[in-house]
Image (cartoon, rainbow, N blue to C red; front, side, top):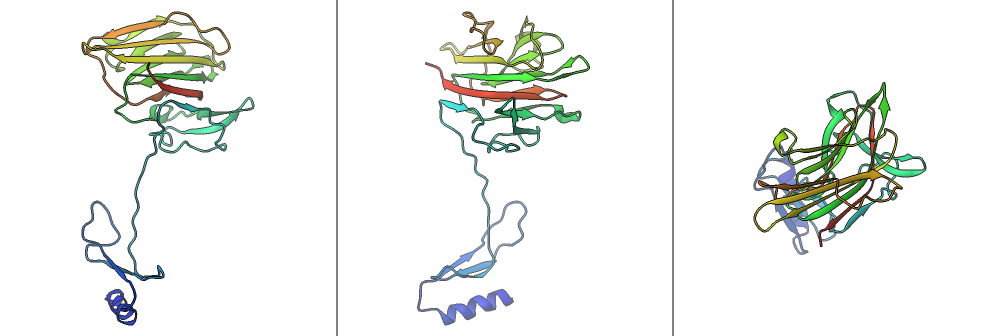
Length: 252
C-alpha cells in the first residue's frame, strides 16, 4: 500500500512531465512480485516502486567457427556452452597454451556430454584436438559430436567408435585404434544428409603433428540417419581430459 501511495504522490507532483507506469500483469514460474505490482518511471529515469526482470540469452557463433581459447582467462567457461559448468569444463593453460579442460572427477560427472551449438544444425564438419590423462593404467575416453553422431577415442579398449546413439550398438562402427594418454590427437567428423533420407557419417583420427590420413578411418551410411543436431564434446575421463583448436565448418 505504501508503494502505491508513493507512486500517486510522485505522479501528482510531476504530472506535467513525461511519466511511464509499468504494471506486472502475469508471471510464469517463481517471482518475488505478483500481478498488479507497479513501478513509475520519470523523465530523468528515476523510479518509484520495484519491478525488475531477467532474460536468459544464448549467443551462437555462425559458421565457420574456430575456437582456440586464447582469449579466455584461466578458469573461464565459454558462455552458452550447454553442460559445461555441470561437466566441470573450464579454460586452463597446458604446456604454455590455452585449452579447455574437463577437470579430474571421480563423481558421476566424470562422464558427460557438452553441446556448443544449436540443435538444428546439419551438414557440417567438426575438427578438434583432444587429449586424456592416465593414472593407475586407466585411460579416459574422449570424442566429438556432430549432428548426433559421436566419434570417440576409447582409452582402455584402444578403439575408435562412431556412434549414432551410444546404446544403439547395431548402428555403431568400431575399429581398433592404438593411441596414448597425455598425447594430442586430432579428430575429424563429417556428417552429410543424403537425398534419399540416409545420412553419411565419416570420421578419422591421427596424432597432432602427423600427416592427415588420406582415407577416412570410418565411413558409415546410416539407413535411419540423424538429420540434424548440435555439435558437442563427449568425455568419460576420471583423471581429466582436454580439448583445443575447435573448428566447425559447413560442408561444401
